[in-house]
Image (cartoon, rainbow, N blue to C red; front, side, top):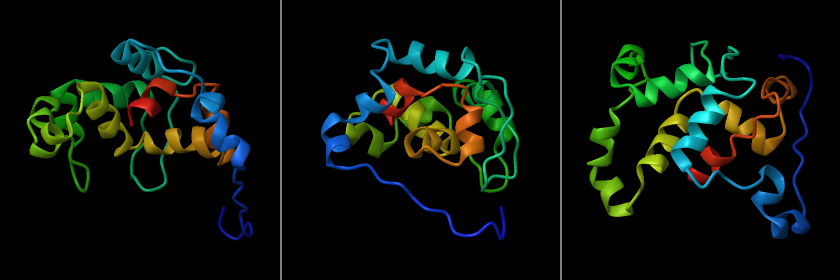
Amino acid sequence: AVGAGPRMAVFGGLDDFHRGIADKIGLPNARLMEGMESEHCRRGDANDTFTPGNYNTTTTPADEWEVVTDASKGEAVSSGHRRVRRLEDLMRDETVVQAGLRKEEVLALQLYTGPMFSKYNAVLRGFPANMVDGLQGNTYTTTIYCI
């Protein structure tokens, strides 16, 4: 909130570094696409609306999944600064090809560059409190690993 005073960031220690991300969010689903779809469409927060700070939109994780997996839905939200490219086009992009990225990684990155960044960051940072509470325990583990 504006005028609420300074916020204090909390950092992990060397022990946290050595335990790694698995200690914080668990291990991903070995079936990457299935895991990511479940995280966005079948968890407690899947249909809960949220409004990220730098997008003029209110959305849900399930809607954002559809935006990146259904070309017509991606096209429908592409306006202003937001442009959602078709997965097929992204997979042919020279940078994607050179990096050897998998389809799941490209989808995760595309989700991260949209409104979902605010949820993934809340998982990893543990704040802001209202966003962490809104996760309802969803750690988006598979998606974060793919990013």
